Image 1: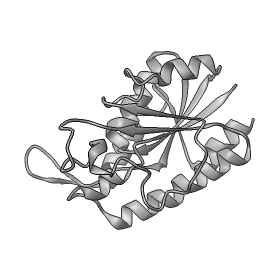
Image 2: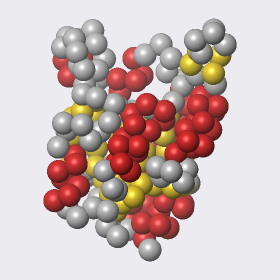
Image 3: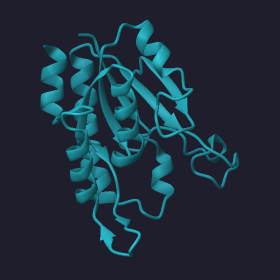
Image 4: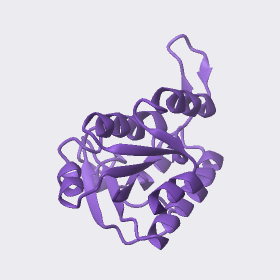
Length: 186
């Protein structure tokens, strides 16, 4: 089955947010870079997706005008098979990605990027509902600590565990980098 790696929102915009955590970011980059290198080595196309939103001015790190809608510092350079801009959580909404995937005969998606429970999970659910097989590489996703509605902290590790739990077997196969590469090479 023809496979494609999607790198979602691995962009400098996130380093401008107060919640950015360098230790989590570094661990994510190591896994993301290994996944990109592994896919390139076996001929799996790698697609880049950037997120942009309003307002369109230099003070919004997700606006092109900010200069931060570019690859995350530390992300290994790669030749993207295609690059898409999205304005919603799912990378498949009005970005053209879905059309490109169909035109290129892609049957399986490997999902990676930023944020685990937001754009990566939403894209995974959407892709599954549209009929793609999805490998969700949890270690090659990044999220940050949050605060629950009752004020209690919710650590990033717990968010990742919850995402893996709700996706596995229903919307995706939750994989390590090595497992995703093995499946893609098969």
